[in-house]
Amino acid sequence: MLAGAAAPIGAAWLTRAALDNLAAGGTSTLVWIVVFLAALGMVVAFVPQAEEYLRTEVARRSGLRATDRLYQAVSAFTGLRRFEDPHFIDRVRLADQGTAAPAQIVGRVVTGGRAALTLTGFMISLAVLSPPMVAVVLAAAVPTLVAELFLSRRRASMLWKIGPAERRAFFYSHLLTNSQAAKESRLYGTGAFLRGRMLAERRTADAAHRRTDRRELFTQGGLALMGALVAGGGLVAVVLGSKGGTLTPGDLSLFIVAVAGVQNALTTLITDIAYAHQQLLAFDHHCAVMRAGPDAPVAEASHPAPPLRKGIEFRDVWFRYRDDHPWVVRGVDLHIPHGTSMALVGRNGAGKSTLVKLLCRFYEPTRGTIYWDGVDIRTIDPERLRDRIAAVFQDFMQYDLTAAENIALGDLTALDDPFRIEDAAMNAGIHRTLTRLPRGYDTLLSTLFVDEAGEESDPEMGVVLSGGQWQRLALARALIRTGRDLVILDEPCAGLDAEAEYEVHAQLRRRRAGGTSLLISHRLGTVRDADEIVVLERGEVVERGDHRDLMALNGTYAGLFRLQAENYHLDDVRPGAGIQ
Ligand SMILES: Nc1ncnc2c1ncn2[C@@H]1O[C@H](COP(=O)(O)OP(=O)(O)OP(=O)(O)O)[C@@H](O)[C@H]1O
Image (cartoon, rainbow, N blue to C red):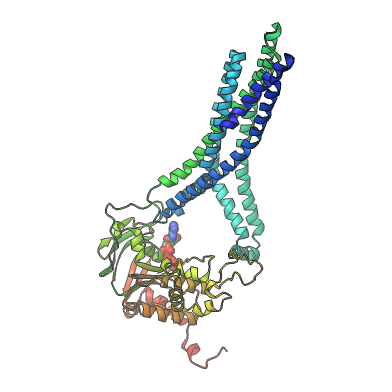
């Protein structure tokens, strides 16, 4: 930076000395002056390369560090609320873009610092020749600085405002390239519709960018014209004033270079300040995510989750997803004694999965309390609580990783333990399928990536599983978490064929024996042997008991059970009865 800053000033003074020397008839020192000028030329040639290398290295290091810190903060949010808040998602996106800000700011400090040094050097040079000119040029720079700072603030706020439009444009572009969505968009012919929506969002965002660009064009263009006017006027004034012959040719050359140098340096400095200011504003999103703090209230004393000995209790639990949303859980009282199995049944939207999410502390009950062995779960460290739970969710993940990794993600301690992985796969009834894959458990379950060997031409590289096979894999991911106190199964068999469902349920029943479990299923045949069946309706418990009690009660459960059973007429079930 120092070398880059000093070089142009040195060059201007050396040029002046060379011109004056020439005017004086050219002495032997002229050669030395020219040699110095040539050496300076070499410095000027090399400095930008070195600076570019160092700048990108700073960008790499600071970007990595900022990204690491950002995603550490994001992973530290224990609940799900923040991930469902569109403003917060926008903030994280901008914060992610803002990870480049520290390097940009450093870059601008370097170029701005160099400009400041050059500016000082040229101003001293200018002051020697025409002190009033220094004052005029500096005064002309003040409006530029104010305007640039104003513009950078406007640009930062524009970027925040167009966040939703950019998010929606990304959503539509994702739909247009995602294989799952491609199926429906081709079938229903929605491609043009989705593309139109994507372009409309892009146009909205582009229009905002254009307005800001135009404002910048007029403001910066006007100010640049004013700067040129000041420089031109100053030059004319100095030349007119020097008619008496006070200026040498060298002085005149230095004056011209110094005025241009001051103006250039000032413009660079001001642009750097404004850009660094804008980057700081962008980095504010990063800081906001870092400062966001815990997304669920943290109890003063965070208990380790005790091993489950007595059971789990919901006491008058109420919940709604947002204050302006209707209640989803209304005054639920439940007791799941240790070593028993409970089944939650009810119509779609009754609140079954929500109860499970509350138990996992993804959300806090709006009212009421959930106890884990008598301890309010709000006072338990969420990580420790979840460590005691094995769960498979209705909306399980399909990771674009190998089959083994897809299972081991349930318990990372099993990542290098093929026996545990295979055991879990056997329990979930997917072992045989996985061994038949081109690379067995090491087969990549994705068409998105190729493995590191880069064998792109191998058609067996990435394999796509069927829906039911994915479901069994998700089950294996839960089952690898052996020795957990509570097993939660939210529709674990929805996509399984009849045979697989039978096998998996027999396996789960064996596994559940003696353990505590919570099962959600719409297939009532699979819940009939639960110790207690709880029927939810619009967030309220309306029936509870075992299968016999509920059938005798002849209420909602009995009605739903009979409805399902009606689909299996005895005539059809009798061996030998074929399709007529
Ligand atoms: N993240 C969310 N934000 C806002 N509302 C939600 C959210 N998740 C669920 N809901 C609402 O909560 C209600 C209960 O949903 P929940 O998933 O608990 O029902 P469920 O009984 O598991 O239904 P299903 O049998 O269809 O799986 C639904 O009306 C749903 O719209």
